[in-house]
Image (cartoon, rainbow, N blue to C red; front, side):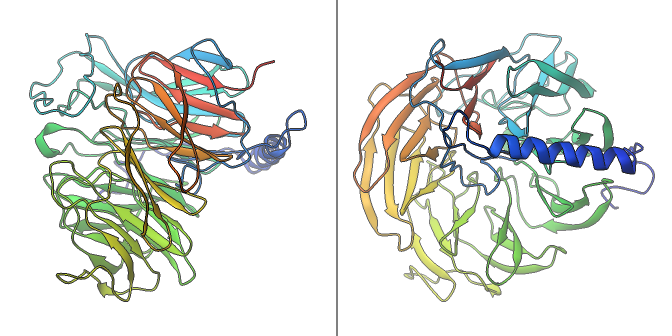
Amino acid sequence: MPLLPSGSSVSSHVEIGRRTRQAVSASLAVIALGFLAPVNGRAAGPAHWPQFRGADSTGVADGADFPERWSTNENVSWKVAVPGRGWSSPIVWGNRVFLTTVTSEGEMEAPKKGLYFGGERKDLPKAAHEWVVVCHDLKDGHELWRRAAHRGAPANPLHVKNTYASETPVTDGERVYAYFGNVGLFCYNLDGTPVWSTNWGSVKTRNGWGSAASPVVHEGRLFVVNDNEAKSFVTALDAKTGRQLWREERQERSNWATPYVWKNEKRTELITPGTGKVRSYDLEGRLLWEFGGMSTIVIPTPFSKFGLLYVCSGYVGDKTRPVFAIRPGASGDISLKAGETNNAYIAWYLPTAAPYNPSPLIYEDQFYVLFDFGFLSAHDARTGRRVYEKQRIRMETTSFTASPWAANGRIYALSEDGDTFVFQAGPEYRFLHKNSLDEMCMATPAIAGNRLLIRTMSQLYCIERRP
């Protein structure tokens, strides 16, 4: 049965007219130019941060002149309360900041920091929940609009650290797409007008942990991976209408990795990590290549640099926690044979170097790995050669879930305690200082212009140099 049967699962709304679209496009162009321009003579970072980890999924924002130091009352341009619970990252287009959250009419159990067993919650919440998309003004934080995408009691349980709004939304500058795991996919124009929506069937995830993989958008197509315990699939939807273009079932169980659109010298591919196989599809859903050897839980997001694709998984309970660097142009099964560390399309492989939750980071020439238990390591991104071994960040830190980011010679790592640890980038490990927000954090920050956006459990902070 098709994912989106004609005339039933997609609620289409009349799109804005031709003249309005032209006016919006012109306005967005002006906004983009404004945000790309230097501020008070300072260089500026990316004008937009349209998806998880930014436009290229790398988490790098050179030129962004946000301050190196901040706290709850230092270099805070604004902060706003975020209702409910959600670990999705904020995204930015022009002067708009989008994020998702889920509120409840009942009491929500507080999350517990760190890695541990026993976080499953088998009983479903009985109180009504509301799945919400919120838009704020980037300059001062005031709310521009708020839309309730769905209301009802949850159909699936969660791990106590997860939320019903852990998938990061994505935007193409015309529309914003909010994906809520087993609830559905909801599309709005940038002014908050509903455009279309889908409703997914409810499916089980491993141990009832919930979902987290975010959607990606590319040239008018929206790609979603839904790996679960019942019937996993990857699908492409028309971004304008929500119409399903194709859907492929996957021989996978639950995974939490966001897919990646890899534009390389040979072609453009959709990369989907999985416990069973890492798979590459063309944009029509045809399988191009695959390989095995991942850990039993897959979370980090792939990305590319130096002509290579980097894929990894590092469940802390596994002996195998691999990092793979892939060359373009592969076909068929490219899995490594026993004892191999490379082949024609796997440039290099490290068997125990991957993180569990955070995605790795390439900055300058180094491939940085932030480990959940509070260690940082570095390898040569081109060869996999070790630059420095795991370094403990600080004895008092608990755990890290948010992915690291980099700008202007600095590496940043946000702990679950709300402390951001700042490091000097380069071949030697050098810790500089930490910035504290005194509240639990699991969402990866966003960067736009010279502003850094950090979501804590109850607040959204805009960090900016203050006079």
